[in-house]
Length: 146
Image (cartoon, rainbow, N blue to C red):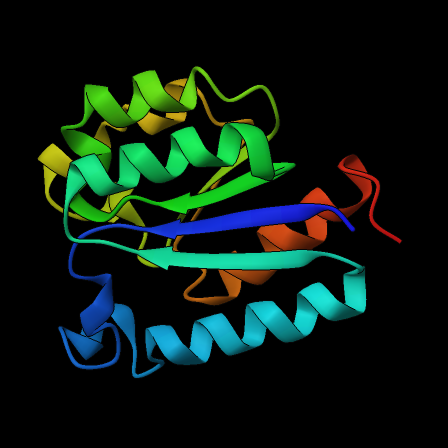
């Protein structure tokens, strides 16, 4: 069964509590459950991760090189600052989809640039937590899911 790593960056552990007017009331646990359920339907194994630490995210991407068939990543604020995450993603030889819950292009100007986009096959922004599910639906046929 193809495996998808879903990686979440800083402050996403507070999803549902932090700025609900921007991010909504869905929690990260809710997102994980929805992704796991959809993964089962699509024939995907889902491995879900969140860290507030850039190095942990880099290490998880390194692990994914040997264990995952695709990555869905919402790097949070590290989107706009982390060359290290970009470099790690560049070592991963399978599809990467970047997801943002809010539309980063309607927010502060510093959020308009994404290092991750330089590596991602696609970017989903502004569709709320549904963006994770759309990413999985897009990836499933690409990586040979049922």
